[in-house]
Length: 283
Image 1 (cartoon, one colour):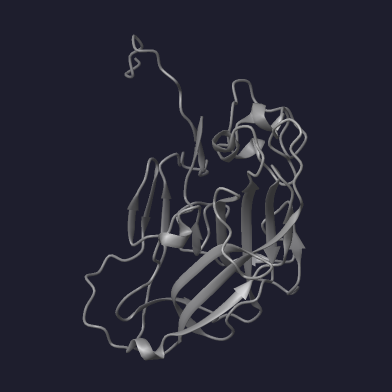
Image 2: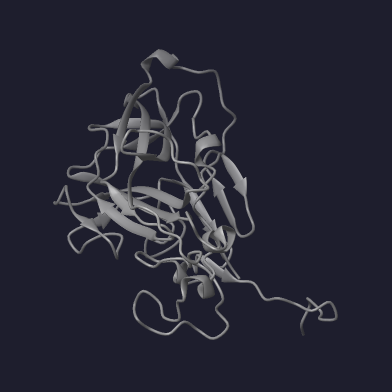
């Protein structure tokens, strides 16, 4: 079993193997009125899913707030063509990630990589090398009920660089008509009939489920005879922000990976299954 870490936003969140720290200060009295917080809503490019199908695409140069601003919150969800919220039991939002980068192409949408060769990630302040876990915001299926609002004078400073653009990674699973919806969202390899990774190389021995089995374009097993229509969706995201001024305290984002070995953050960890008689402590 694999546990995916690092896609959750909170002031202080302690998970199985990740820790996010967003502020190490006690919040003083607010210096700004909520009236100066602006909000604007955007949509990702449209994506189409059939029953059981997976979408895991990186969209570069997505619409975003322009100028030097302080981000106060970032809300996102999957919606249909009419703007209606899509139930999780139809389309499961495995995760979404948003980060900023320096680039020259404002409409570069790529399915198999986070940044094209012409871009340079800005992202957060660490600590993983090689831009692992570099997102500014990111959540999963809990996104509709999770507040990311930063109170008081705090804000995430963005837009201070020339040619600063934004990237979205959207990983969604259409579970309509599948024989085991829960197994599909767990990315069980047998349900996807996957034996090789997205790079075409065989999966390692013993790999039973995880992100490497539910990559872009694969399909989870459907019930016999089930026929369903393709549907078009969007990731709709609302950015809450303030124009930047010197009274705002810039908030830095740090994501720590407990699997860090001194040279790389693994992001995924393989959890061994122990029998009752096995000792957790090995010599």
